[in-house]
Length: 244
Ligand code: PXP
Image (tube, rainbow, N blue to C red; front, side, top):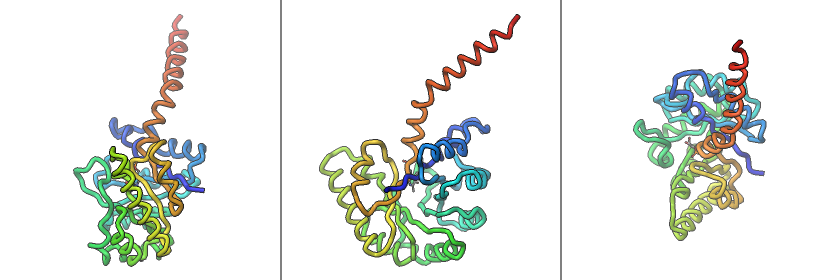
């Protein structure tokens, strides 16, 4: 059974558009759990554009499934992770100007730094995962820095249009998953997944965990719009009825 971790960052994106308290990423996380999600993922970005420091604590304490914390490999983030103690830390590259995570972490060029962070996570009992592109060199490097798992970046696969190119990218993902599993690494995947493109990803037997956010939050808007508008109309009628 593949575990689905739901990323609730974009609930916070809507909240931060008004810098208020609604909608609550914790409330969304609890509903995701109720629906069967096996874990919750949040990404604390350096510019705090969606998830805030307080969310880390509130969500960590409020949910009952494991918390996967995505973050950049910086000292600031490492200290926060050690304080919050999530179930798992997933290191991702971060560029301030990017809209979302673009490309996997270059593990090969920073093995020393990453193995240092990995050791600190392991000493604290936190699982250590690396978000990488489907590339043999990055898989081998991930093993050398003693990651527990890799999360294969499916971003490129989800953006391709040509059937031939999609097939080739899926093959790369499959090969990387096999290579990682042979080395004893757990294999996860994520980025850009939706109801359709997820199917070929989960057909890869080595993949055991998924992180999906943007699409689910988008669909939740459609699924919840009718209910929210009906409730508002009810409130309007109730308020009008109060007039003498
Ligand atoms: N995995 C990682 C490492 C990510 O950075 C993200 C986006 O925050 C996801 C998975 C989820 O991607 P999406 O929001 O496109 O489903």
